[in-house]
Image 1 (cartoon, rainbow, N blue to C red):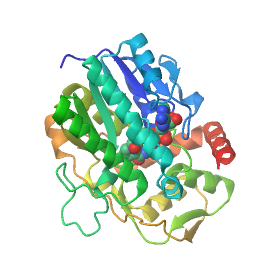
Image 2 (image 1 turned 45 degrees about the horizontal axis):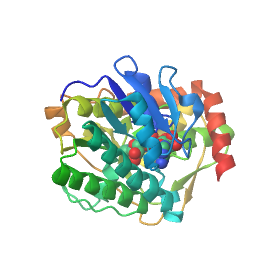
Image 3 (image 1 turned 120 degrees about the vertical axis):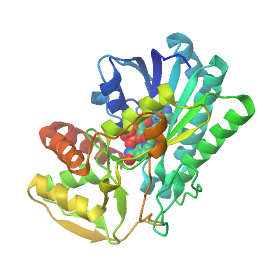
Image 4 (image 1 turned 135 degrees about the horizontal axis):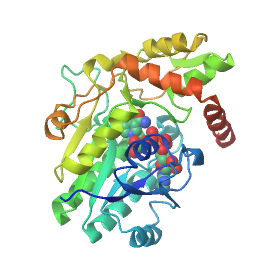
Length: 323
Ligand SMILES: NC(=O)c1ccc[n+]([C@@H]2O[C@H](COP(=O)([O-])OP(=O)(O)OC[C@H]3O[C@@H](n4cnc5c(N)ncnc54)[C@H](O)[C@@H]3O)[C@@H](O)[C@H]2O)c1
């Protein structure tokens, strides 16, 4: 495909898509579509992003936005993404993560443009009993309602590729941390607790995650946009050395903050104890490599929250007002 110039980025007021807009605003003319839901902060908006407030599951509205901005490609980041909330009630997860992806896919197909769909390693389930890291052809066995909706969207898009020839590329990112992550997620929540003198609630059972810097995640997605083969999925993951137990990472966050305590709490239901994935296909076919090791990822991430306590305060106020 020819290199896109004008793109639509959905979920641009959230964590990962805002990093994409920050890092690639000089390469693309970006229209962002976000409905200002969970995880969205207006202050995450990059000044050169054309800011549209719309729900991706609203077909007529999305068609009108696309008519106006005439993009060469769509990158779909928008999703409901918090596992605990999906366990409480998953209806909005089906609406945004599946029906929203469907609207974007049908519009992309109608216009003959590429859709990059941002998915997650969580579609593979739990790697605790695995002997090898997940590859792109590992079985899809999601175990919580959030990851089920992400897997459902992937299967739907794959069927659209096979039946109608939709130009779609799927990326499956590892557990991601970095600036502007909503403080319901572990690292910004830990920084908040440590700064405010409250114990961080840590699930009792040790769990392993690969900790990827958001800049590495979005550079992988951008490479997939330009070089991904239509119909293919690409794992985007840091090096094996970036795998660590959650409690070790929280201890390292505590050391960088310089204070804080941890309190063990009951695990969530169907708690996945290991996400373990390799990204050799992306490294080989997309010419992508992660730039951050675990130490640099943690130093940059925690350092950003300590330098931006006003952002953290605002995000925590929004969080408190919505729970
Ligand atoms: N955070 C991670 O560790 C991680 C890892 C792998 C993949 N992902 C995927 O990356 C994507 C972005 O995740 P994030 O962590 O940045 O989430 P986030 O919650 O910070 O941002 C999501 C954004 O999407 C918007 N949104 C949700 N539903 C919408 C709808 N129907 N219409 C318009 N906007 C809508 C929200 O308002 C929000 O701004 C998701 O698809 C997620 O599944 C996340």
